[in-house]
Image 1 (tube, helix red, strand yellow):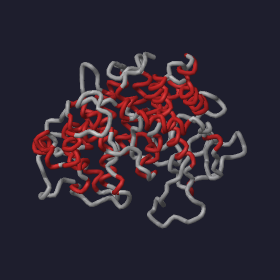
Image 2: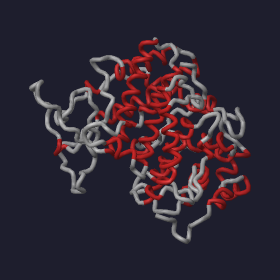
Image 3: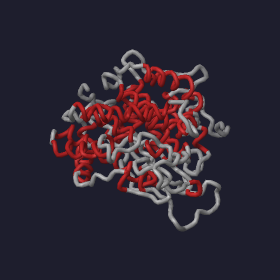
Image 4: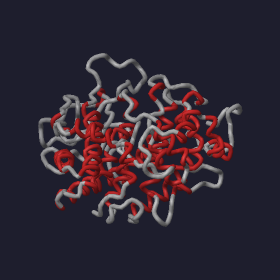
Length: 428
């Protein structure tokens, strides 16, 4: 898909639009640069995220201090063909486009539990990083032990049964000698594991964890990485289908794999880890992801046709920015990598920037729902401001509201605690 002729604009022109000379086109952004209403620490391209997000982080962490540790084994679905520790969910819409029966409703308890975990652990970790208060780190560690360490409750590191059609499910056989249930999930369900990314990023900041606990959690993410990347795995090879998707599902696969590989690397240090898995992912990003995801102009052609093109485009942009953060090193920044015919992250940020500054300028149809809650605060702006030294990106990031109220929109915010992404964690 290409841009209509009436809105086709060269990458050079869009880069110019996002420069300081074009700020007059976006009154919100122009005023943000001259009269900030948020803490003014840091620099124009590296705002003080700790100060800006201080109250937000502590409010969220206070809420999650009392959150019960609820593993998958406590959330059973009678239709699941899998063991209790296997992730299981059902699609919200019928796979054949026919109306879904009103009863029973789709089973989404596992999806919601993983999403809540992905909000709680990073928020508690960020609060611990800000305050040093071990109440926050103790609460985060309790969740990690239940989900990733305790043999009785730990989640199986796989997404074989995500978005399983109820028609293809059958109860787990009572006979222990019965053959294992078929893997009936869909590759789109792998997106539901995206909250694991920020949990992986949070782990190095919890430096009070015992060495055995830390090793066990890293081993879990290593096992999940192998599930994501092993093409010889039996079953429908859901991960390979997700990897090869040209939409945000492929980006989700890349971000999850990158986070797992980063955590498993010896240094656990963004920008320094150089093991073979990260090298392979960096090569794939440059050779496949950029070409299949980004048009020469900088838009995402495979998001435009969805019912929520604006939301999906910004979701995809945030995930790609997070991938750039994880895979760039001090010797090689993939932020700057660009194919000969144009696609690259610089073009993608520049193309989307005017439409984050002014939602009304979005050149495609508006989303079918929650369009008014967008763009929300996008981590892509914060990370790109640092990577490209663009103060207008950081200025816009500071003016946008975080934490949209609609769960459907909040689930398309892949990074909820940017402090953990811009601050160097302790050595692991």
